[in-house]
Image (tube, rainbow, N blue to C red; front, top):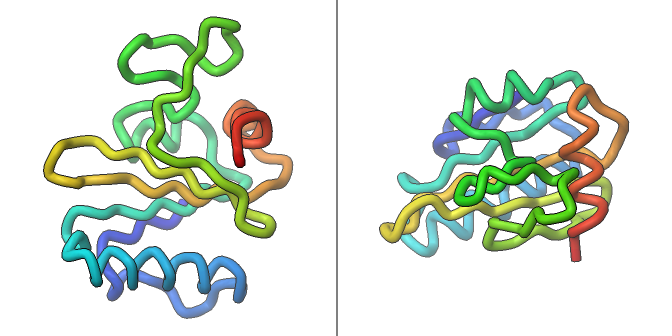
Length: 125
């Protein structure tokens, strides 16, 4: 998992598509004055649900309000935005009224966290 709290954290040795997505999100956050309120996480294929929970404090496949998981028919999306971007999914989860948000970039491939990829495939615009 790659965690980016600011532009200085962005590694240079990344695939072009991923680097372009990160640059776009970081630029937008900077332009809107939200750079200090935005955390980007690149969830990689070898990251498990436990890894993600350890970093975020919650599982992205569980609605944080209802505690209902994605695989339950009663599940309702909680995120502000979820979309495909090439071979990646972008999930934006705004956490507070001041604008603090997690932006998750999830590769659309087989992974150690299959529920997350399945949820993104099912709900992404």
